[in-house]
Amino acid sequence: MTRLAVVNASPLIYLARADLFNLLRLEGPEIIVPEAVSREIQARGMDDETASAIRGASWLREVRIREIPSVIQAWNLGLGESTVLAWALANPGCRAIIDDLQGRRCAEALGVPLRGTLGLVLLAKRVGQIDRARPIVDRLRGAGMYLSPTVADAALSLVGE
Image (cartoon, rainbow, N blue to C red; front, side):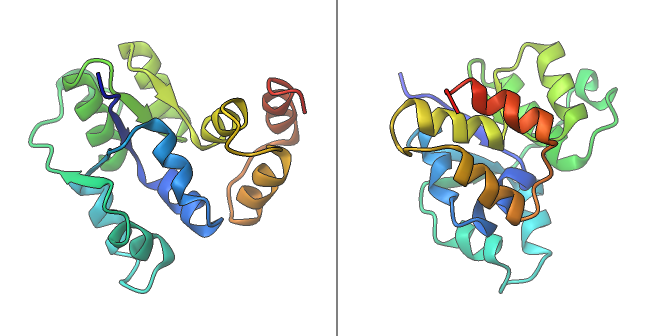
């Protein structure tokens, strides 16, 4: 069975800025991007690096989410996080790729499998796609991703760094 994953805007943005977009492919041969997330990215302009990366990734599939379940609406998340979680909830076993803390808490409360941008880096190290995770984390930080030193060090210790 093919794994499914659905991604929110911030992982797309950080991975594109750090030239690490293909790390998303670790989640499967096709990654779902809700239309609301795609619109959020496209609003940044057609010359935006993330918009360009999305256009060049044939393995991303845009989907329209017509309804956000009330259990997700109650969390008052942004439209992107809400549509990511709505897709994941409607497709059991689908992993949500979200960095937003409140969105992650909602996913956990709903039992939705979850990974963030940092988790993709750790996965890449575990499966041998990268030799060292710390330089990749540093690239993501350079691309604007905020990670406290405590969180980064704790995560990197999980992969022996």
